[in-house]
Amino acid sequence: LFSERGYRSLFYPNLSSKTSKKRFIGNKGLGFRSIINWSNKIEIHSNDILLIYSEENRRQNFQNIIGNPQARTEIISEYDYSSSTYPIPFLTLPEIKRKKQGSYATNIRITYKSEFLDDIIKQLHQITNKTLLFLNHIEGVEFSGFEKDDIQCEREYLKTEHNLVSPS
Image 1: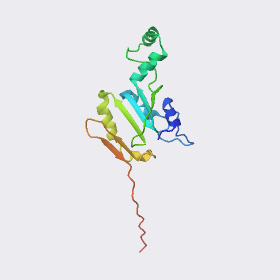
Image 2: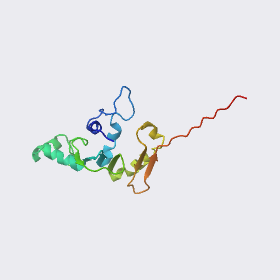
Image 3: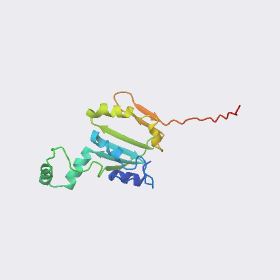
Image 4: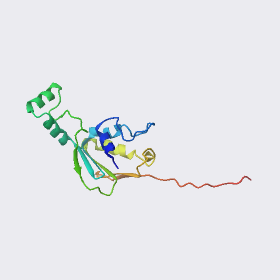
């Protein structure tokens, strides 16, 4: 489950609620940030809080912050941005809603750009139960909503037996 500190860490790179004297995988936010380029919308639902990051939200925030349409046009042309670019970080100023949680502890929904589908599926198939060795608090991961089969990965626990053999 996301804590308040966990949600806050989404807003800033290299700020994590998973801090400790040791450096572990998953404490810089870079993995999460890597999905931004191929997504139109990211929803994070945990602890009855729903954060929504989207291109539409970015556009609205840009218009609200820079209220004057002429000033917005000047900013876009000064930096030679396309007219569909909004110079506000994607993970800043999400839409925040209170919503009852479903059956999962944390649900992350990503609406991806269709041109990245093959790359996404290729990367998801590289996730194995061995990957979960590095994700201490995750019991399983389910990727659903693809045109093809859903992809699931669950933690496996090894059963060990201690066989004592007496010397002959």
